[in-house]
Length: 503
Image (tube, rainbow, N blue to C red; front, side):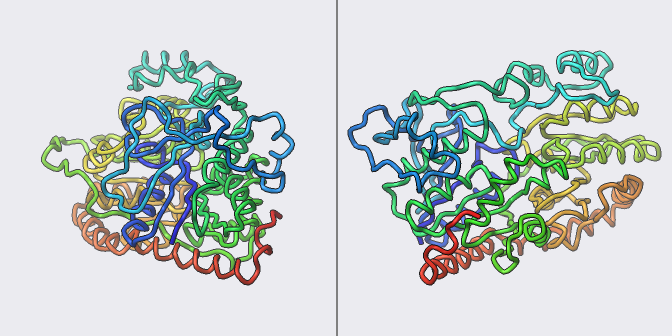
């Protein structure tokens, strides 16, 4: 089968589980013999982009494909089409090496030349540091960081760049207009960027043959809808995280609207858990029968072994690894840490990640008097992730709402026991993991202490957890996707227009 996949992250361009899932699914589909054309809308820079063919419309109008009609434009973009230059010939962007990754036999990767901001506000630096602080006032981030360093809190050096980095996504620095290498303007508004990305996808992918469109998360839905309208191919919308997961009840209406239109326009919807399927049904009005649950997987042997490099220490290490955002519950981790340290002083807590609550979380640890016991490691990539898992005695995921949660599987793969929130999709498939209500910091602390104080419990969780994750494969997830593709294609044959109209 020929699959056009629209994703937001793909290693090494990754800020969370979405990129890991896209990689795992693509590699598994490729191994099963299916052809995947993966379109990546990122501002790809540096030598790490070796496996991505980065394409952009040229100003030369000589080999233009037919311009998409107003009916083919994503909703809200048609009125802008007259003021934008239509895409021309496609060519690799200068200055970047373009070649396929060796482990892929049938997959190709197209990177749309784009300065689009990360929709999850979790690039390599903390963002939103200008927001309200623990004390209730509003302080500039550089002042907060200086004060924290003066009090002995270890803040990574790179975080001082948060206020001047336009890619960070917060405040006025993240807005304004930017240019692509092809010379086209992108409005800094992320909604406008998503529509411009949709137009570029129509231009770049119009000459490619495919059987189904697989769109991952909301930023790619306008492009998926536009392609479905233009080509008549079925759209499959994959939900890795909803706006309710990310923002609670304070949703961004524009993002919610895009999510809802995308799910209703899709022939099939893929949810990463039963938890997510219930949210999609209740909050977005999508029929339950239209939704397939496709659990994420894990590549068990795909890790770097750092066991020989581990430094023996009397201190126990407890790890939080993920985006430092409301969704992930970092404040509950810090609250539990405070209670653990009252009973067991020889414990250190590591917070690895970045996000809009980073500075506030550092302040919270300092305000509780445990700043010297909490190490903020910043955003980690590649083998550093395996290294920190293997250093830890326990991984804790206190998420308020976690659609799935790949991180606990990665921890178990690295022989680290896990304590996870009950409001997570991964809790549906993991039996050999400790589970807790995210808000119950007393019980969270008790279970952390139980693992640290009782080696037999830790050993049992490691042993049985390791056997359990071996059954959660990306190949199994890919086969579920193929079933959904086949059902979508069959539905389009019987009802060619019924499911492509945006609700």
